[in-house]
Image (cartoon, rainbow, N blue to C red):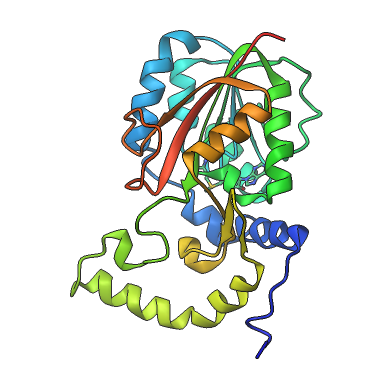
Length: 270
Ligand SMILES: C[S@@+](CC[C@H](N)C(=O)[O-])C[C@H]1O[C@@H](n2cnc3c(N)ncnc32)[C@H](O)[C@@H]1O
C-alpha cells in the first residue's frame, strides 16, 4: 500500500531544490571547508598529466565548494575563475582565498561567460551529479559552449556499475566491530525516516539512475551513470576524444571497483 514514504514523486525541480538546500546549509560549509586542501588520487594523477597543456591557460573551476581544488589549480595557472551556485560556499571561498574571480553562478546558465572563454573546465568531486538529468544535459551544453576549440573538460561522476552500490555503510569499507562501524550503524537507523522520504524521488532509467545514497547523511539525490553511458552522453553533447579513468587515475573503459569515475573530454574544432 502506498504511504507518504513510499509514494513515488518524479519531479526534477523538487530534486534540484532538495540538493541545492543541502549545499546552502551551514553544515555544507563546514563539510567542504577542508583545513588541509588535498586532491583525490585520481585527480592528482590526471591533473599532473594535463599540467603542461594547462600552464598559464584560462581555467574554470566549477562547483568549487569551499575551494578544495583552488590552490592546486592556481599552481597551474593564475588565470583562475571559480563558480558555485551556493551563496554560502562562494562567500566562504572568497573570504578564504581573497580572489575576486570567484562568483555565484549556476553551471546550467553561464551567460556571464562568452562563448569560447576557457581552455579548461573542472567540475570536481562529482558536483555534476547533483542536478537533474535535464539539468545535466544543459550543464554539459553550457560547458561545451564556454570552452575554446580544443579545450578540455574534466570531471567525475558516480559509477552506476559500482559493485558496492546500495551496500552502505559496509560497502564503504567501514571495518566491522570498530567504533566507526558502530556509529555508522546508529546513524543508518536514525536516518531511516529521511532515507525513505528521499527515496520517493529516486529514478531508475535505462541509461542512468538518481539515488538517495548515504552521502551527507542521506540528504542528497545523486545521479549515477555507467562509464559507457557517460561517454555516449558526452559525445551527444559534442565532446570528442574522451578518456576515462578509475578512482586511482588508471585508464579504463568500464569498471565496477570505483565509486566514481573520472572523465577528460575535449571540445573538437567547430
Ligand atoms: C560535492 S560538492 C564538491 C565541492 C568541491 N568541489 C570539493 O571538491 O570539495 C559539489 C559542489 O557543486 C556545487 N554545485 C552543485 N550543483 C551546481 C550547479 N548547478 N551550479 C554550480 N555549482 C553547483 C555545490 O554547491 C557544491 O559546492
